[in-house]
Length: 299
Image (cartoon, rainbow, N blue to C red; front, side, top):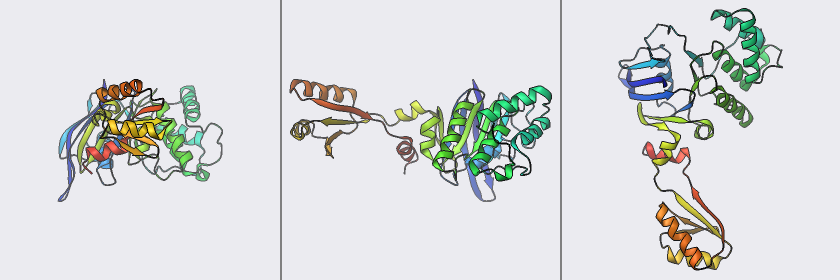
């Protein structure tokens, strides 16, 4: 089941075309990476999903309900974390989440239990001081708790790890990964290592168009045959293998066999066995998301 379906949405601002046929689907209970360079149209797409801007063409459905500009979804199915969330600095986390919960119609013990659950999820259960003293990372974590307060089916985060230090980024990514137990997560980013870490599905946005959308397994399959890295004990053995496999390359005591098929891998293993060449390591080198993104967008 798809929680979100975006079909061929288009948007112009004056003479500038920002979105020119963006389409993708977000399955249930997944972390979806929305990838693109700055200015690719990621934030505009998310505003359209939230019903905050009117598209010129296309359709958006959340949990089977059509998104219409200026109208709130009846199901209240979306939680949102902007790139720079704002809070009432004089409140603490408990007070702020209580306010957010009451706005959505929650109250009493159910609200208290939900707040306790969320504060534990985002690691703020022991923070009782005012929000104005929070770090950037703590505010991002509180923003995630606020966006999840009414159990949305879809959580949208606009570049949640930008401007965070490595520790803060790891904390946010761990929280988003854990949140998939409660909701589907869509987060935009241009930090491709973040996508590599936690995403099940991705969409590449380039020039206002969807360059690719699918699972992380499918995106790796676009690369086709991957390289093989071979490490042997003896340089003489490496040279012998290099003479046999003329398309290979020697680098820092390793032999790289580029774009090696399964058949080529079998030939390599057979050659090592027939010539009694001891093997230290043989490994397929999978392309990372950064390499794949650059290939897909043609850069």
